[in-house]
Length: 177
Image (cartoon, rainbow, N blue to C red; front, side, top):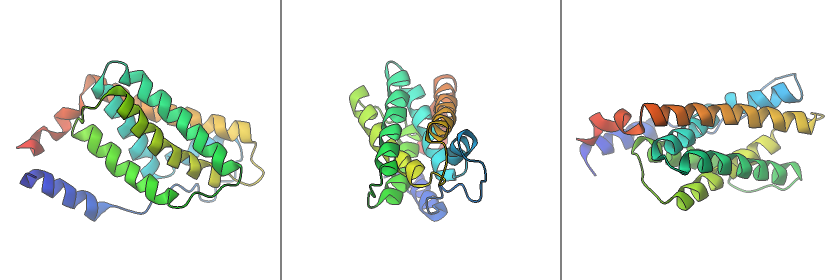
């Protein structure tokens, strides 16, 4: 490991915070509560932007496949949590998703499309679990789901556009020395 990568790893570890995917006292139930959930936690925002950035910079079928798998798996995780199942270590999975997806995006990890899709799906399921577990009591489920799907799609798209036109490699070029 080069010194610059070791320094980056040290900075990431030092600045890590617990997964904070909680909407707080948001009074609105339904679409707005769902839309705000991914935007209310830096961990969700970072993971979703990173997944899009990685997909956009990977190009080819990954540009569409990985975000689509992310959304689908997140919806599956939501369904599991909304059905009352508790999955241990979900917050740890969210934290791992932030580190892994940011590293993959920023270092430009080149993997087969199926492997990248599987990684995006696995990490997205943890985010979906959080969305389901944090759904406000009495919320209109369809509206809540629509809200978090729209905001997640927007974050993934933003990352993908940045990855396509800016390229992840440019962010890390100074550290590759």
